[in-house]
Image 1 (spheres, rainbow, N blue to C red):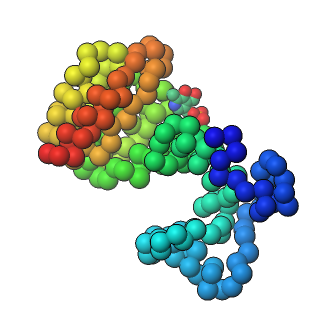
Image 2: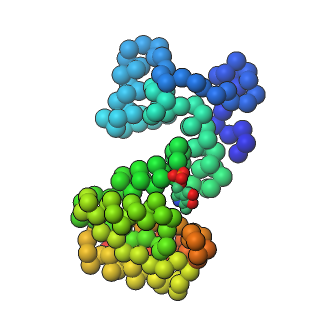
Image 3: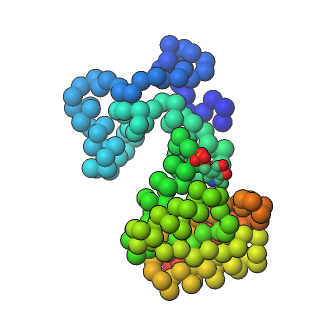
Length: 185
Ligand SMILES: Cc1ncc(COP(=O)(O)O)c(C=O)c1O
């Protein structure tokens, strides 16, 4: 995990990954640049064995990509994304998966910034919420998901565990099972 995703030969043999202080990257040809942009903006599917090229540090950057790959490996996750702040990560994730008319099912309580987002900002975009108490009975998430379904499409089950400030724990397996049941229904 400590060296995963980095090839020293790409950086003059440096054992540790240098910090790439650049906003933009060059392309070998205009065609290569075009292909990189098409992929980055989702204009086409990735070709077999195609390596997405670097374009612009806000989209992708060697240091961020390596960190994301290593965190995904550590968490045994499919992939990872890093952000400059917690609220940037939470807001971006929720806005990616929720649309007007959707419902977010979330553990309760949540961090103050998240609570403000869920209670005050998301409703302005037509997104309702159903909370379930972190640390309560294991079926709470399933009940909340069913209740949410009555209001609209449940687009996200958001969990904060341990909860702030109660330290209530949420069973992630139960949440995954509730999400699976929603997907099947
Ligand atoms: C559980 C939780 N979510 C979100 C945040 C927000 O993170 P940031 O201050 O980096 O935006 C915090 C910050 O302490 C947090 O504890």
